[in-house]
Image 1 (spheres, rainbow, N blue to C red):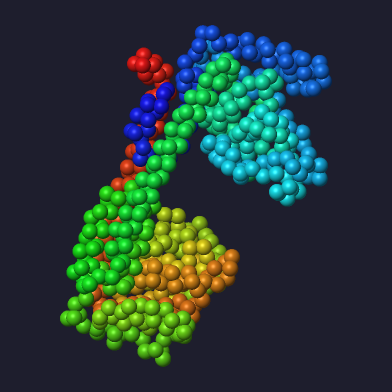
Image 2 (cartoon, rainbow, N blue to C red):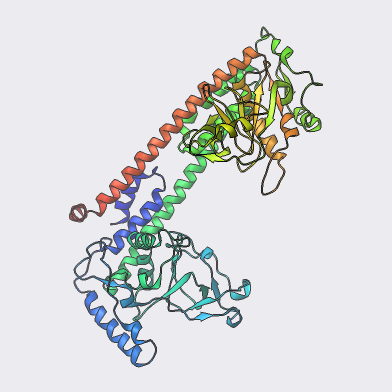
Length: 564
């Protein structure tokens, strides 16, 4: 595997999700299979290296530097694949002293020495991103001492790729293990071999089902370790460094491309929110933005801001033209202010003053456009295996009621929970408390349900269509206002008086219907874009896995080598 071949492979999968991290793992996989650099006939084989390691262990035991037990060769578990003839699979405990670092209490640490924590090491690459001394950090727990050349291994999942070579003496958290070769080896090769995919998989499998999964010593010492000749270890490290540097450049180029796309996408969306001379000018901007988005949008996460902009434009009267012929008969259906439920008048007026009203529109507190606004019972319902649907907040999303995992209450509990108002089709379930507050959805037809906790029920009157009101409540105009006014700290919520005073933009009914139709059309475009992007990501991911699997196939590798 050379840089040109890696580059050619990358170009086929460059747009796949996490392409570069996958390629990094691929390079490591090739490295520990003996497929990254050619084997040299003059290299001392690993079998001879093992003899020298055995002799050194015997010397260390005789000198009292290690215990006899540490010098024993553990029985290795089944290795995952074959190796070249001059390599050997060995149990890790055969060539390394695992957890070699002496334990030190905080008061005994040398303030001038290095103190390593897991956060200092970058995942996947094993690069050191920060270096602090004992004096720089307050330490209250036992630490593990390490020496120059020790391989420092993060044994706690999900930090299994945090592996580096100590270039200075120091101490580490006990979740980082010092692995010390009995005989000097190429420490950089040893570190990359401990980041290899099959070893990560081995440790991950062992840690499944535990709260804080970590590699136990007894599992570590019997794990398979691919041992090449010492000279080949050094050649492997040089080649890995070369290919990883190439991948760094490819990753930087991809990041720059994504940043450029994001800027162009933002500029296109800005045309949707920029002031327009007239409605026709706005529609031309919208046509341009929506026509360019499919070419610029490459990630599904870019669709969410587009949806939010569409909703924001909808409630501000910028999606369809105003028609002077539209009558305002819906105004007569507004509840008189003196009959409206009490609301936070000051908050309403301050927010409403920031709204630029289109012609024929008014802005009203929610309590004037709603027939009823009812909070849920402030008790936890008694759940049953079957019965009547009772909705939890995690089932309510913006414009969607998720009934895929229904929860139920008894008929008796249902009757108690609907005493104030029985939910009907097109009533809006709204979250005013909890982690995802400020979103609502209409109740679909022919569904009988009641509310769980932290929900409220909003029933539109004749001044507003339920679907337009739902759209308003989920728009940034209202959602941002709700977020600004939350109280409760760790348990955020918006007060009922604030909700009743939400400033609802109110166009004539005819325009409401036109707005909803336009929003539906644009959201359908967003759905298509999002589905296409997800499908493309899935296809690219499968292509990437197929190409990497093929490249690891021995027959494929032989053909590639013969072509050189």
